[in-house]
Image 1 (cartoon, rainbow, N blue to C red):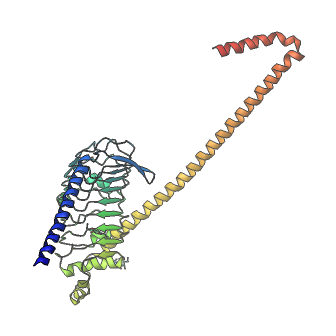
Image 2 (cartoon, rainbow, N blue to C red):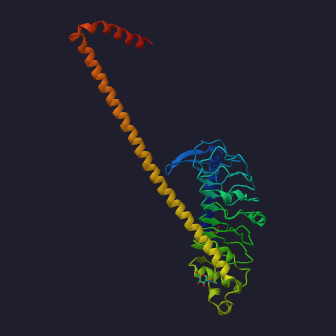
Image 3 (cartoon, helix red, strand yellow):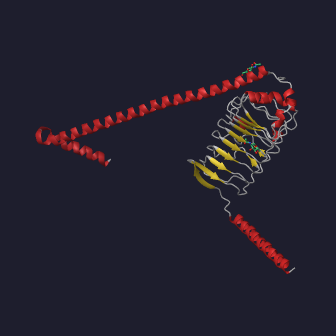
Length: 358
Ligand SMILES: *[C@@H]1O[C@H](CO)[C@@H](O)[C@H](O)[C@H]1NC(C)=O
Ligand SMILES: *[C@@H]1O[C@H](CO)[C@@H](O)[C@H](O)[C@H]1NC(C)=O
């Protein structure tokens, strides 16, 4: 009994102590939270100028340095992006807006960001995704995951295809999508995350237009689709060496799956779509290389011209210096040797004095 009592009070003491510590800590947390500066910090990272405003509970983007290339505004309380929100920050390349409360995005909000490469809009409540995002000329990575209302904007998304953005990564996981949007040809896409959406269909035509696809995440997205309806797409992905991630591969090893009809889809059309994508990719690569050669050629030419002009200038200066020294020698020489021309010398000196006075 006694023993138990001691143990009990000891336990109580420990509990109380940890309570006190916990309370103290939360109080401390509260204090630091209140004292935390609500100002973004500016730093240079990877030789780029960045502004960091993570977790400051801000409702608006404050005024920042104008040349920033990175803006991390994650974990704030931004609700809207207006047409002019980014108009002073046109050099942004990496924009992180995850975990805000964003529901409304103006259709032109991202239009000034022609250098934007990565856009993270994860974990918001976006209702209207503007079509213009897909036309951003440098956008390579787009994260839209965990937007429970995004499927609404996909139902009436009018895309001008082929889209301009050279997307390499597209993440639309966990957005309650039941029908995949058709993006048209995406010749650079290598990673496509469509996990945690209860899809009602998975068609090969969605993947035929992605000829560089390496990995597609289908985790927890296929439970509503009949096994046999998956077969043509699974075959297509296997044929093109695309790695597909599933939560359960075992159903692909069943007799039932084996017995499914093999080709109810139009493989000719799929092949054409795939071919169009490959052609677009090759075209892009050749434009890139020709632009590079053009740049090298013009760069070389410009360098040569600059060098040539420098040479001319140096020669000119050399000449001027030479004529000057000659003239000085002459000047010094004249009074001593040629007494007849002496009269002209003071006039010349006077002239130069006049000039210097001017
Ligand atoms: C795809 O998205 C899910 C959920 O957002 C995430 O857990 C998973 O790691 C992602 N897959 C890949 C390959 O990045
Ligand atoms: C589609 O292309 C593959 C090779 O990429 C070929 O094996 C197949 O026969 C083609 N199918 C049709 C219907 O043209």
